[in-house]
Length: 266
Image 1 (tube, one colour):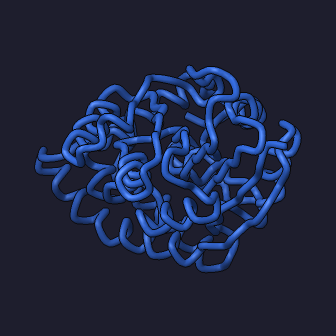
Image 2 (cartoon, rainbow, N blue to C red):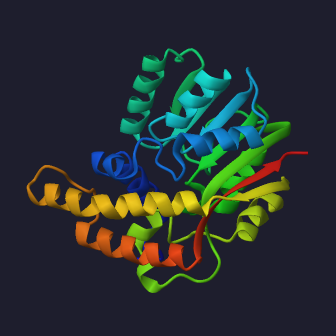
């Protein structure tokens, strides 16, 4: 299925299902984004997060970042996540870390956030903004829920030029590749929503490291799938290997990268 043929609801459902699967956890680890916890900590530094800050984590996945911000910085974090199984795993993670009093996870969509206006000091969205079909609407929702002076930090894939056709399909979309934008495009969405652009940092080295990890693990996990031990929801292993090879080439030639982008609400 091409991304043009897939309705927005189907794209969101596919992303949620794929990222809640055991196969993806084994491929990418627990943080589900390049740089892992170290890059989450860098994002927190750039947002100047403090104890007691109310933070919204959009597309919070298994709760790794939310629990980190609550346990290491003393923030109160609300995670918004479509996948019920990911929310369940996140709640278990928060309980195991002893921060369930400072972290909660709710079902929700980035384009219709289930929270009140002007309630958060900061919003984070890691390796997910590029998968949202309605990026302008998601940016408007971020602006809505931030308090005056609040900050938003995105960490996401970036591109410099058009991608090859093999990186424009459904699998590439849910892998955060197909609709990767330029830094200017991301900042344009935030700026159009009334947010003031701030610092950007390049972290493409973290993307290359994760891509190499995924590439090395794909063959092993593909064999496990052939033995009936593991399933990759809605996509095939051969397609995944082909897409990974193409993405790796784009990363190495500098067309695909990874960046942190920060903006604030006036």
